[in-house]
Amino acid sequence: MALLEINNITKYYGELEVISNLTLQVEEHEVVCLIGPSGCGKSTLLRCINRLEEIASGEILIHGDRITGPGVDLDRLRRDIGIVFQGYNLFPHMTVLENTVLAPTKVLGMSRREAEDKAMAFLERIGLAHKANEYPDRMSGGQQQRVAIVRALMMDPMLLLLDEITSALDPELVSEVLDIVRDLAAGGMTMILATHEMGFAREVADRICFLQGGKIYEQGPPAEIFGNPQGERTQAFLRSLKKAGRI
Image 1: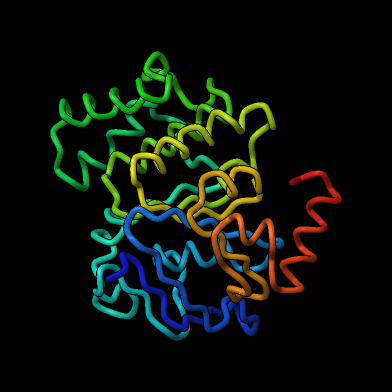
Image 2 (image 1 turned 180 degrees about the vertical axis):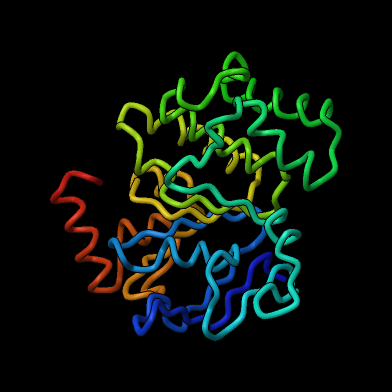
């Protein structure tokens, strides 16, 4: 049984169909990268999985249990499915340590000492233990994004969603964030990433899904999608990236 099953979901913003009868399965420990032009539905799909957006039809299941429709414990769902956004969304009035221990102590009932020990271990791992008592506005964008990833990991999610997490960063800060994702992938974390970083997608993904018009137009291993794409739209998209020097 797949960890995540998305069956024929559709999503509208008003009369605009942004996700169109989309189906996707993700296995445990798999890393799936969503690529495609702006407006193709990548971010909306991630938000639907986390129930930040409601679908019009279809269903989404985690380990066979339906997580769409009425009667779902959204607090429990969001403990199991972490999400990191383009913006860091750290609480500006809290230190790094306070930002990272808030959810596990309030939601999971973890003791403050246990949460702090766990947070410090993560911060040490990403090279930011010395920033534990700093406030977000005194840190670089790359540092804040790394803290946002730690905050999501503090809940021990079974699935991590990453929504264009490097798009707001200066180019020199991108690599420090992507290094963390590489480590998570190597450690077996199940992830779905929406990204414009094609070289990174080629390196870290088990599977690439090219989205067009709210649908998965083509999918396959990175070597196939980047080396021998079959669909005309996929080919055109990758040609445009090559022309722009982004591959």
